[in-house]
Image 1: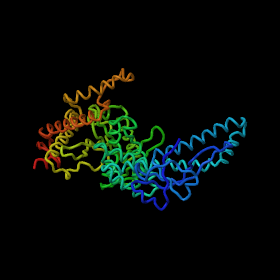
Image 2: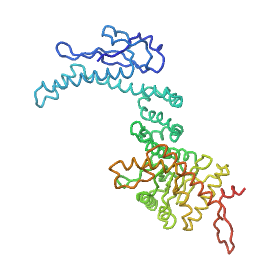
Image 3: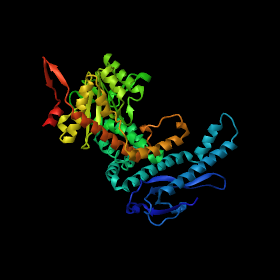
Image 4: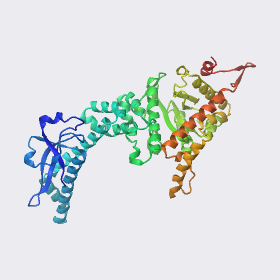
Length: 485
């Protein structure tokens, strides 16, 4: 297949402009000679942006490559790689047919192939493929103003690190299209290198919807990873004996082991920290959620952990509140609710304390009157839940609400797609089956608004009363006192 390319003197490489790859060697003009032996010319190659590098011309012959750099674009490089790969595969196939079967067949084929120089071709082809991926990412990052900071940070990395960080920077670049996820990179940058390494696999595993067709899945996956990173960052700034400790990532081995979402120690002992984001499904919907809490409780009782906390952002199943407050099934485990406030801030509040508690409920960070009212309502509901009355708290944290006509219409479209899949014939459609990004966004908007409304209603109720020495006194939290003026 003919390939358009251009050759330039090495001294002119920097004059091309735009994004360029590193220089690398590659077998080109691959062919078989009259004796059927594979041959190739070795060329120094460089990738350049489309439209850069002069007027393309046919791939030059061997004598025209001496002292020159072959400038190509990604699709041209792909053709060069495919040509070499196809020739190698054809040679291997013919050798396999020509050499009789026997115990030495594999060795004889390898000797022939090595004699053709394929052992030198393969590493060069691998370098070319890696360079094409790195180049494509750099072009993508440089093409969008929203990705400017990510592009600049990536360009500052040494080439070897750019290769190692390809997957994760591809994720960061793709998330700039989604407001819900674009802050992941800023949070990532705040982590120390050791924590970045710890979470590298989680972040790199986020798949762009162009690969999966699932925008909502990508957003919810990003939300889960983001919560872990934000909580780890918050813990780094906290005192009270808590610290990030990468040696505290796992407790136990095998199926019964506990994987610590955020590796934490308190006073040099393991503190179990689970952080979960549930914007659509209820946390506690699956029985294993409470079972995990019971595992943490047992670890504390057995002295394997000094404490544990479960942080939840999103929706909590009402029946789980019964287990926490009425049945008191995990008394030594702290449960933290991470909520969006009217001002746009996020606030972490302890629904119930444990044996050792994370430093949350920071009233000093609040100044907006609307935020203060919402937090006051949640605290009021928590006070009632501690007396076994969980209905008010459930109305706030469950995320249950009556959807608007607009949301019902959007969800009906999602449900039709759900029903069109034969695999879902016996399943019930729920909010967790939403697969359209606009439906997801409207659902979150209405869910959060309903939470604020329920909390504001709770804030207007009289605070719980406590009997002290025969007298009745109203008891206010620090946030409630601040709201009262």
